[in-house]
Image 1 (cartoon, chains in turn red, brown, cyan, green):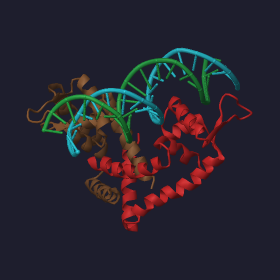
Image 2 (cartoon, rainbow over the protein chains, first blue to last red; image 1 turned 180 degrees about the vertical axis):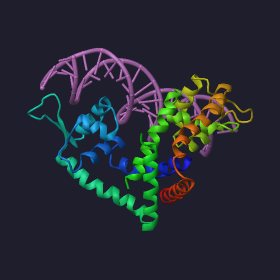
Image 3 (spheres, rainbow over the protein chains, first blue to last red; image 1 turned 45 degrees about the horizontal axis):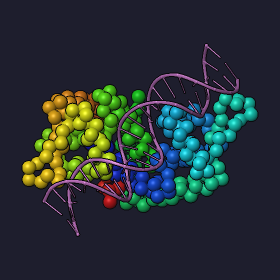
Image 4 (cartoon, protein in one colour; image 1 turned 120 degrees about the horizontal axis):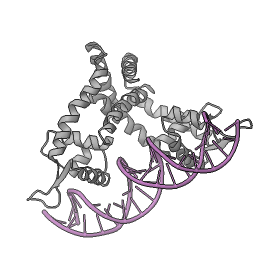
Length: 133
Length: 133
DNA sequence: TATTGTTATACTCTATAACTATA
DNA sequence: TATAGTTATAGAGTATAACAATA
């Protein structure tokens, strides 16, 4: 029962190291990755996908905006909301970090056989189903 | 590759709800559970087991001490350090929350067959091995 | 001098609730 | 009135580095 927590902890601290080396926090990284390959997202949407409340998201977006990875774009039709969009630097970062991050993790996943990966996938999916409400 | 993160997220938010309903945070819960069934632990040890730095741990222990779940005991031989020990209330909490927590999770795990649990366990162990340095 | 733990500093995330502006 | 997002508030955790006390 502890297994899930400890496995994740091992995985997480591994990924975390990489994320921090890029000068990002985990929630910030999450936002960048979520915005990648989209044409932007409303705060609302983004908050749902990244599982933070809107108030929290405001701060995260503020900090990403300061770093010029993201900007708020006001759509002409509804000035009550706006789209959060990756800036040019944000795009570059995404295109850089995403493969790098995958590569970084891949090096570890490659130590497993395709069959092992397959069974791990199945196992995790079951866990996911059981714990999602 | 996202599976681990999303499974854990589902699991975590489920467990988190329970922990918060007890008026604890996750790191605080972690400390209580780590101290349970031991005769105390040095800050050092405790920091290692719970994977936080000593400075951070000081704050967590302070808050648990305020809630009277934990106390600092000075060993006679070495006054440079001390043992963190569960108080009587802490023991009660531990004895109450731990089975409760297991029960809370068990309700979900029971939806899986023993074979499924077995294969999940195996899968997680493999992941753990691959990602621990 | 080395070790144990605290304190200072500074930042990020967190939720909740009150608020502003638009629809 | 309802919705989208910000702001205010208050707290917790986080790392790092400087510090005090003990060994």
